[in-house]
Length: 480
Image 1 (tube, rainbow, N blue to C red):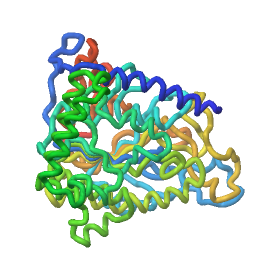
Image 2 (image 1 turned 90 degrees about the vertical axis):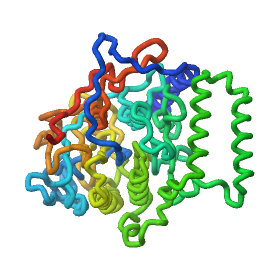
Image 3 (image 1 turned 45 degrees about the vertical axis):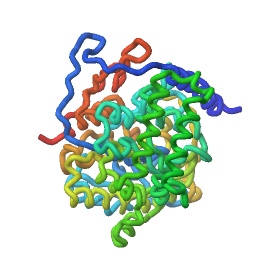
């Protein structure tokens, strides 16, 4: 058994302890004061909703939003000389260039802010699951409690925008039948907040409409009876012994919310087949593109937090341990049109100013460096080559945590703005205005009108929205 499998199993074992504790815990209580006695003051909200476009697997910044020296593929070229495998292209903002394959995104760069200085911690052996857990919850695993996803924090603190529409919706990620499914489940939850603040999972956008309809052919009266029977079965289940009263009540409220949606007119928002043909075709580049369309429709209907993912599956999509350049060409075709269309549609509908769209990944990638300088992380590239021999060797195949990119549109951020920089030569470390995960979360919370010091009592101890309440928002990304 290799070191990565041992680390993965250890991670799962420790996370199971936190999950069990969450099921037994009582209701978390919102505090007016921090543990230091400081009053929690919420900022004025700049946005009402967030759409997180998640590039699961490690999106390589030098091949996407932070181009470096381009060296084309040629057998015999030393790998150490290659910095970017795509040439830089102009955007509509004079001082911002991105890479070829994202020509449509280049046309909407004037609507947002590009952060080039997002930094991630070195968590030892680099497991995507650990970094994704950290990014989505703000806490480095393992923890003694089940930490809520950032979408659950927003759902809990702010509540729904529309009482019928689930406040937290997760689009595009399967939680069954894929690699590392248990690790994905570990952070795709409401944790100690309870089931009603967890995500509505819609792995296939084209099937979302079916998820908000009673079973085909079932009469309304029979469906109502089935719902009542299900509630009774849950109430009488022997598993109740493993749930606190709060968790049981939260589960029942979650069921009632789902039942209410099934009979509401807003459920039409889930049916992307109702989108006009011309618009649908511009989004229809695959599951991610259709997920962007669904996200736009759900924001229109009143969703609070939506995550749309290209889907994390080990060694697929952005997880380029080999054949990186060819894979990224395909990934760019999936995201370029839909992301640009989403921004333009939100703007045309008057929603962009109050909707924060965030494009991010758990870390970047590099041609030769694993982790960052000084890291003891084991190299996970499929092959260790010093000179290009085949096309499969051409690409960013190693995890890099020293400098990553986050793109933000709408929601009060500056337009056509570049925030932070990385070094012009390898290693491409963030050298100006670094933004940690803790500070990025503080920035997102601030945009939504939530103090980064928001704190709940959980198991008789304070638990903060950002780790220890110390998140500092990057206020330089916001306009006046």
